[in-house]
Length: 223
Length: 223
DNA sequence: GGCGACTTCAGGGTATTCCCTGAATTGCCA
DNA sequence: TGGCAATTCAGGGAATACCCTGAAGTCGCC
Image 1 (cartoon, helix red, strand yellow):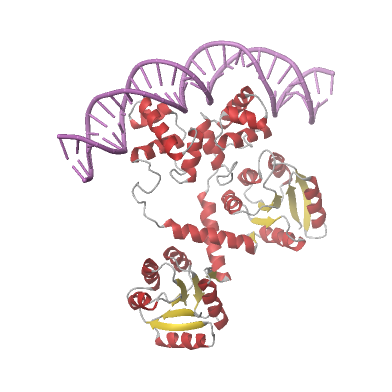
Image 2 (spheres, rainbow over the protein chains, first blue to last red):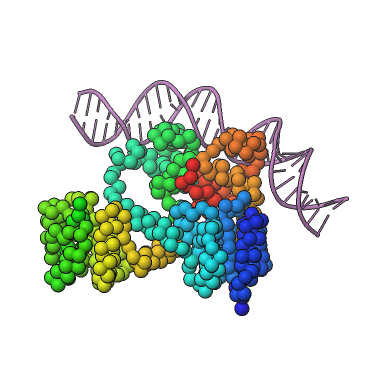
């Protein structure tokens, strides 16, 4: 029983290279390749591979989103990210998307083969550098996690009401909807919003949404 | 300049043993010992050691609590936990309290010396087993934290261009700015945006920003 | 008692987004 | 080769967001 593999990368050279690199292993068989996230999602239901080697940076649907979709339709398929960039953001976001492994693009043939075998067996594969990175993230997060809310003064000069406005706006509401929710007039909401944008040095509501999520003023899961 | 060390453990044998174990290293000097958390806290301000080797399980104030107090009065002092038990709970709680390293009690002399040198130099020291434990905790926590992007079975049908538009919009740009960035007219951007909102079942651009961040179409740290 | 901030709101103007219809171009594929 | 999806763009109207000024009521605080 060979381990079936799907390769997803928008660079032909890398696809071909990876395939030939894997052709030397008799327990691994490359059964398909895709050059985009969308193509990958479509191919999975057709080919039903055991493992997907997936690039992150691709035009259109990126590797992380593709992973999400793939896992959605087949939770058993294992996904190993192969990225030239190894950043905290990619790794943590990747884990959120359900990846089973992460390899730098300059990984050796042995690493790739080992990763495929490991995830096919149901375990996770993350090399030392990535484990270290995760560790540091975990450490700083846990450590910094405990710190007093410090009322309001220290933050960025936002008032209580302004925080409420942000929460509303960042949850995707229009000014009118915010006004209704807080039982004030649209004009009031506009004023608050203007003040908030000024204080934070932002240009529009879109950036405010980003800011709010970035600074954990709101969370993305509720509702 | 020797690294000054304070040993904290309520077992005399372990204190003595550890001290003699360290006497062989000429860059490390044990300048004091304490048999309780309270005593340790008092001694720190007096002796001002570089590193504290601290047991967790002690009568009265335990090692983690003591760490918190110690760090409170001197943030520069480094604390390495030496515990016979290595549990997820101890490790994560320890990190919250600000520990700089964690050693199992059966660590070799080399490990202890290495740990002291490492934390004295400002880095963290956690061995492989502990790193692995943290990793697993992190992984399961992050992974379970996610949730499926609604129940749309097929890829939500976004085109490549639409993804590009989303990336632009979600980075906080106005239609005009997106148009400039992609070298198309504002009208084109509007059309794309409308189609995107329809496909995703969203009402406005604010919600699109949320969607994009939630689904990892864009990341928050770049730029 | 008053000064400053927070919060509320209005008027009136400009800019931008949102919505709908219609259409030309390209490329792919059956 | 005709059809379909994708991408591009326009006109024009309705809705909403953004900007500026001004102001009234509340509250805490010196």
